[in-house]
Every structure is written in structure tokens, then in C-alpha cells.
Length: 79
Image (cartoon, rainbow, N blue to C red; front, side, top):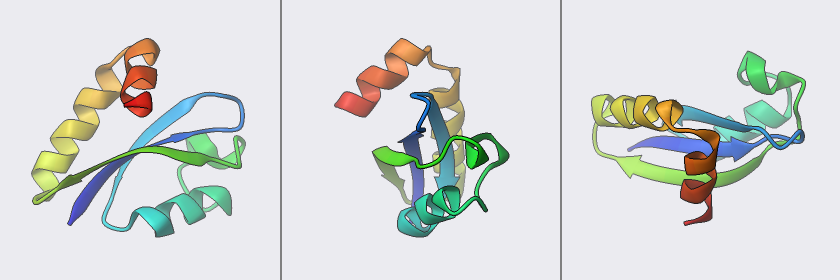
């Protein structure tokens, strides 16, 4: 399985990423070995996950989410 996830950082910003293991990836963000963007913004909290059968579908969705306004990302996280 492939996942697109969104975390909320300690400063209130949102980060969207792709992974095959959501729990591991969130842990990596929180221990400082995740994405450069989240390193100074820990702890992060998982706020949204979507599941896909293929990596290409997940990566396409990740791109779509990253193009959304912050307002729309927050709505997605709340749904």
C-alpha cells in the first residue's frame, strides 16, 4: 500500500508527504530524521491519510494536495 499523509507541525504549518509506512514516517519526522521542513517544527501530529494501490497514484495525489491553498488543506485535514 502507498499513502499520502499530512501532518501539522508545532508551529501550526502543514506538511504533506508520501510513504509506504505512515507510523514509521511520522516517527521519523518527530525524531528529526524526516523531511528538512519538519526538523525544526517538531513535534508533528498526523492529521490526514489517504491510501492508494499504486505509487504513481499516491504521488499524483501528493502533488494535488501540495497545490491546494492552506485553507483547503485545513478543510481536507478536518474531513
